[in-house]
Length: 203
Ligand SMILES: Cc1cc2nc3c(=O)[nH]c(=O)nc-3n(C[C@H](O)[C@H](O)[C@H](O)COP(=O)(O)O)c2cc1C
Image 1: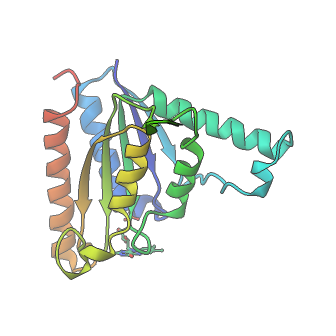
Image 2 (image 1 turned 60 degrees about the vertical axis):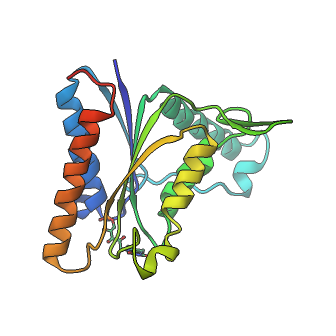
């Protein structure tokens, strides 16, 4: 059985493009493999707290809650064969809610470790699909240098050992209705092709 973890992070609820695309992909995957188990973690709808001083103290209720949440999120991640991340671009990067998710799952000794040879990711053997929604155009052209979203996401996933990552971008969403519709249609086509060609699901 294939385990699929979907992490959504948009603050725009039902109007969210990234959430529409993660849902489309989930439906495609479930159609291809009806036995697939999908776990949905929506940090946009139910944000997880920032790591604060209270969470860093030892043997306090706050610290215990932060540790329990971190353990729960890491268990979801480790159980997943396929990780799907819905990532809007907020101020050239990822939403802070998604960054908070990474802050909880990147734990030394559990999802990565350091040795004499340097850092080593411990979350291996996974496929990740990151769906990025952006008002502007960053995959090429003059704003490409402002993209602090995709490189950061690639680094964080790779640091944990998730190196097989496909990025699907819905860009130019604010360039008019035609551009937005084309971007969404192209992204859906890319996701369908990915589901067919790359995921180890029963046909
Ligand atoms: C707080 C905030 C910051 C944003 N910053 C950017 C940005 O830096 N660049 C950009 O192209 N779009 C930016 N946008 C637009 C979103 O990326 C765009 O609306 C996208 O569709 C959001 O994803 P969603 O539809 O899944 O909510 C921003 C939107 C919000 C709400």
